Image (tube, rainbow, N blue to C red; front, side):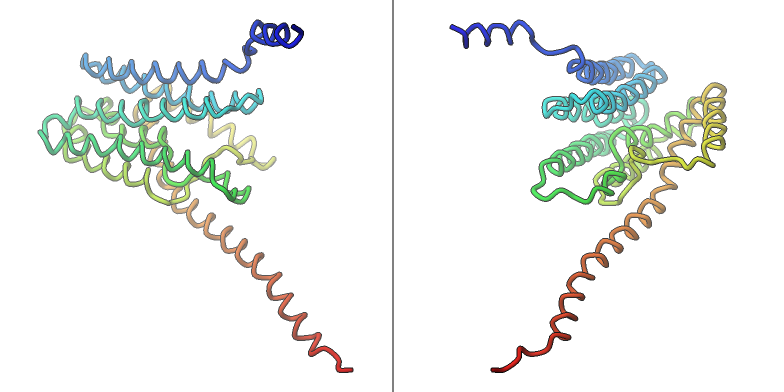
Length: 278
């Protein structure tokens, strides 16, 4: 009777609200991604892009909130991956197809299909890395393998965002949009290390300049949001060579550190010489 009473009591207690908050944020991102598709079907491309950006904001919050509250779970990770696939793989591709690539016929649809497929492959690789037998070094947490899905969606939408600001036909041309979509899809499934900006720390003497830079970015977003977002995406791409160089430098240091103990052991064996004879 006591065990039955304890089980009934645990059922009544249920989960704390803190455990539900990250999943609610993930569902909010999923709803934003679905709403982006709805806006695109109605021809409201600006609202569709805004909905994808809102989904990216919710996606950035859910993981951080879960870690802060200490309520990370496998269920939340899987839900987040499914949300990312729709919000940053399917939704941007459909928006760009309806805005531009539909003019290219079957070839435009093939290019459209490629982007969510690359997004799915990237997310599958990320999920399998989470359950790897041997955990990677701690410093690798500062890098992603390939461009993450939210950043990929932002980069893919740059031609469309530029077309919102300038009155020209070339940003929405199927060749331009298709080329950008193919390049970004390739970056998502590539093995290039990219900065994750999760564990970065700002030196004390750079705090005020960083705040000034953030204020300038906010001012640009308020005055010319689409150009500002496009420039942010281009700056992110320009950082990839630096992240690749830093990653290789750290990898080289790890290899040298692993080689030193083996060298010390071999030198000690040589110095000790043959064992003494009786």
